[in-house]
Each structure stands twice: as structure tokens, then as C-alpha cells.
Image (cartoon, rainbow, N blue to C red; front, side, top):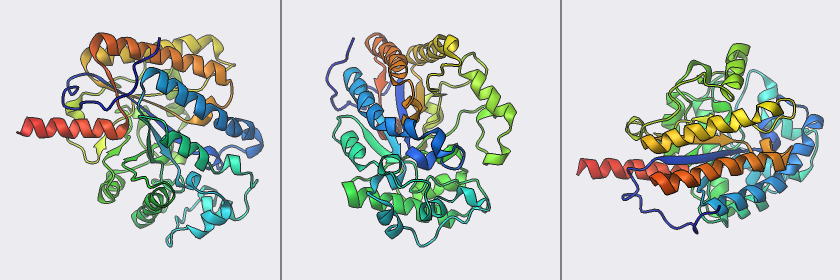
Length: 344
């Protein structure tokens, strides 16, 4: 069951309906290079070039307006261009393994498909309803020591510049790598013109932490929460989002990739998301689902089947309750428009 062709939403008329936002952390090897050896992951990264067009097809079929939060390096053509576009101020992480520039000086592989993706970005931009957002220039870690707001500012400026120079895109939405950020980092994003960020759910297991502060307890709880209710308060009222700037479009649920080892639990995972989506539609709340394209790199068909089931539920909620699919920038615009209407 598909959807009608995507049209520009009348944001004022739709302001009382529930919102379904999808954001994707588009990062290729830059997002995992410090935690997973390339030899263990390169097939999955190559498969992203097949997965993205398939996801775009599904989004078009169901009228989904998604945000692709893209690492700035992916806009580039080569390591040579990356080196030429280095900001003057680089992150000086205490843990040298975190530094993407150190890696780029001697990469494990120079294979273009696992590091750069301008063709996929062009395809996303050419697909109606899709927003290209930012995942910082270099997959920047805000909470790793030493924490430098100046380096973060330089990194974000680099992301804005490459998107503008290569594709004429003005980045409006920001997703922080590893979900690490502080109010000060959000303020820098506002200073540079971002209108929306993706914050974290308000549960202890989802609190922003540096990598070595994220204990096994929190990670285990997040894994369990994907299948059975553990965290609460994952559906957000629009009123709660209105007092933030940039607008903090808090995450609700991470869509974990299909796991053969946990295949008997896949139905539970999808059912949990569908139930939350229905609850958000009935209560006219905001529901934010996210994942990485490389999560679909293995077992692509199984992952697309799960995604289709979720999008079918959205379609039902759209027909029954008027639920909307909005990108992050769309959702921020509607929330700000609602503020202006109420103030008048």
C-alpha cells in the first residue's frame, strides 16, 4: 500500500497532527573506523551504495520526508580533496585513535566507496522530500577530551562550506556523532544557523556520554529496550520541543539492523516501533526514528521488509489520524510556525 505523491505540506493546517520524523546518520567508514576493523565491515560499507537507493524508493512509495545527516567528508571526491579542505583548527583528541585526520594520512584502504559518496548525495537531493543535513564535517566527537568549542565551530563551518560549494546546499539540521553534545555545542550550532538538532531521549540509558563513560549497563539496557519496554517518555509533545533553540527534535527509537543471531526477536523489535508510532499518532505527539544506512548493509532484504512494515503503519496512521512525515527541518519549521501563530 503506497502513498500519494509528495507535495509541500501546509504546515499551519497540519500543526495539530502527530509527526513522524526519520533521520539517518550517513557516515560510511568515518563513523566506525575507530571501533571496528575495516576487514570486519568493508562488505557492509560497500553495500550502502545499494541500500540507499532502495531506501529512497521506499520513502517515495510511502511519502516519507527524511533527513540524511551526512558526514562532510562524504561530499568529497578523494583523500586529496579532504586534505585540501582541512580546517585550520583540528580536534586534538587525547585518544589519537579518534582523530580522522590522523587516519586519513595513512588510511587502511583508499577505496572510494567506503569513504566518499557524492553520487549518493546527489541522488538523495534529487529525490523529492529528502533533506541533506549535517553529521559534522569529520564525525566530530563533542565530549571527547580535550573538549574544544573552537575546534567544533571550525568543523561545523567546514561542513557548511563543503555542502554549499559542492552541491549548493544550506545545511539546516544537525545530528551529533555518537549522540555526544552539550548545551554549549547546541549554542554553537545555533550561532552557525542550524535550526534543528537531534537530542537524546530523556532516560538515563540515553544520556550523552564520552565513549569511555558509556558503561555496559547503559549499552545493555539500550539493547533490551529495542525489544521490550524499558525506557519511558519516548513520545514527545510539541509543546516540550518549543522552548529549545535550535529546536531539539529528540530521538525516540534507534532502528537496529536485522540480526541473524537475534532473528527470533525481530518481530518484537518491529512491533515495538509500530506500537509507539500508533501511540504517537493517537496522542498527536512527535516520534523520531533513526538509524545508519550501513545498518542495512547486511541482510538488506530483511531490513527493507522491517522498514516496509513500519512505513505501512505510518500510512495507516496518516489515513486515520492525519499523521505527517516531516524531515527535521520541516518539523522545526512547523514548531516555530505554531509558536508564531499562538503568539499572534
